[in-house]
Image: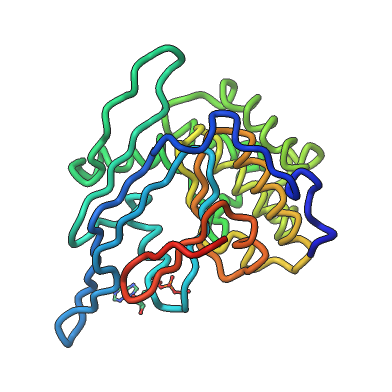
Length: 257
Ligand SMILES: Nc1ncnc2c1ncn2[C@@H]1O[C@H](COP(=O)(O)OP(=O)(O)OP(=O)(O)O)[C@@H](O)[C@H]1O
């Protein structure tokens, strides 16, 4: 897919803020699923740091626990061992905010944390069928207490950045699969989360559409200080990452990108 790669990608500039400020950190993360035979240890002591402005690929064989890890990093599920800490970006001129111990939060606070701090993109985008593209993208801001009038300009801007300026009022059923996935990416970015987690974002797209989405993801992760963590089996997408982490035997090991 070399032809689909944006020229900037061949000589990427570092993110404006500079990758390096740790925003998310997992230590000793473990996950045991209960089973009839006593329990399945999927993660057994995962340590990982995610820095602002970087794109991290998580790869590994099927069933090694990549989705499980993403769900824990995004606080969609609680671990059986270990911690996840998050640190939002400081306001201009302000000191570093304190670390938040994610799993010390109760379920209600955890839901608010997810909406504020984490963006999610899944293989099946889960757009709301009765709402148009702008409304779907604005949804995280509405959940956070904002109004559609206040959120719509940013939602429209994100959709335009993703090449959907002429699809703003289309409902999901009126969009192609690739367009729906770009709406899901815009929605994930709506609240300016520190971390965007993606599980096989191009998994159900054809090669050309996937290539275009990969270029857009690479550009977006460079354009802002957000960190992208992407679980993928797609070697083209993994090749665009700043770092590739391989999950094997319940642990993460860094492999050359
Ligand atoms: N709720 C659950 N209860 C019991 N076992 C589970 C549960 N969820 C996942 N597993 C098991 O945990 C293991 C890891 O699953 P996970 O979906 O995280 O793997 P994965 O690396 O993302 O796989 P793939 O690449 O095939 O999507 C699998 O063997 C799966 O069967």
